[in-house]
Structure formats: structure tokens, C-alpha cells
Image (cartoon, rainbow, N blue to C red; front, top):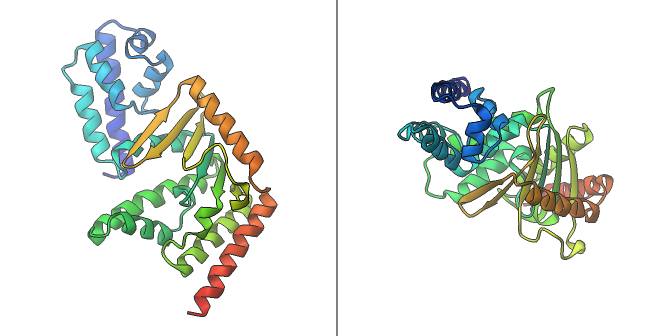
Length: 277
């Protein structure tokens, strides 16, 4: 399903939600209190600005006694997303964020990936998949990366562990291109990137990836990911703790200038090794 068609489908979801809520004589605030979100969130669902998570869609069905229609709509729309089900909502929020802060312990974040690097990542996780499936995954990832090309792009700040620079995903030539891309984005002042070097030792996010997203008219959200699973967290206390950890990571990481020098040095190492093989 094309992006325009998907948006139109979510707009139908929102219009149907508004119609059924009003027919039940319930305000946005009242419905929000019944499904454990704010009234403002209900308004954003109805305008297709934000998409509810599955458990919220299920609670809406229960509150409005709609016999599972919103759960069924949600499952159909998510199934047609170009992303895995657990990541689809986070991908939608990326488009709305005014600021995105990521920590990547082992793999270059998706928004910074080159097509060649992303293809190597997908092939590693799907070694028996058909080319068509890999290309579909790749299109979804590259579509996400457009958020950094828009004139209204969010402030993007990434902390990369040095491990992510040193694992030769896709081979030396692919890594050369990947690190060159990051260095170019940094030099063009489109992204802020710091490297957490091996020498930093223990740090607050050992082995954990995190993505913090801030919005103009909604509370900040944290996305974390495990094996075939992902979690969106918006509890203010949890977000505050994650933000504190991220601040410690930034304080521990190399400066932006030193990070750029390390990234360019790693790219040159890959380039030199590629030319001698």
C-alpha cells in the first residue's frame, strides 16, 4: 500500500472513531480516561496525526462496545505497513518528531544507513529470503531516511558505540561508504553524531539501544528494541530516567570534532584495506 493510501486508511480509522465516540455521547477526555490516554491523544487519533497501539485500540473497542472493529482495522493497517509490527508505530512517530536522539551499541541506526549497509543487515537476518522480500524491507528503510532530508527535519542526535564502526557489515567497501555518509551528514551540519569509544569502558546503556523522540504537541516517547520485539514508553518517570542515561552517554562520548575524526579514520582504514584485497 502506498504512503498516501495508508494515510487515507488511517484517516478513515480516525473518522470512524470520532463518529462512534460522538454517537455514544462521550467526549475525547472521557474516552481517554477510559482507555488510559489523554483526551488530546484521542483527538490526534481522530485526526490521524498519531496511531494508537494495539492495546489502546482494544480498549477503545471495549469502551465504545464496537465488537472489535478498531482492533481489526488496526491489525489490517499495521499488516500493510512496510515495517515489522512492533516497529510500525515508532516509524510513524519519527515523521512527527521535532527531535530524535538515538544510542546505537552495535549497528548504525536505520536513519543513517546507506542502501548497501541496510541490505547487508537484512540479508544477515534473512539469509534464505527472496530478493523481492529484501528489496521491500530496503524500500521501507530508505523511505524512513527521507525524514532527515526534509526542510523541516527534526534535530537528530546519535551516539554510536565504537563497536558500530568496527563491525564490517557488508564488507570493507560497504563500510567505507557507510562511514563516509555519516561524515558527510556531520560536515553538512544535518546531524549531530558522537562516538562512545572502547576506552570509555562501562556506561549507562551497556548492550541497550534507545531512541528518544520529542514532539511539538505531545509528550516525549522512548523506543527500545529487543529480539523480534519493541516497546514504546511514554511514562514521564521512565522517559526522565532514560533521558538522564542519554545525557550521561553524551557526556562520556567523544566531542563531535573528535568523533568525526574517528569516523573518518575508520573509513580510511576500510578504504585502504579494500584497495589491497
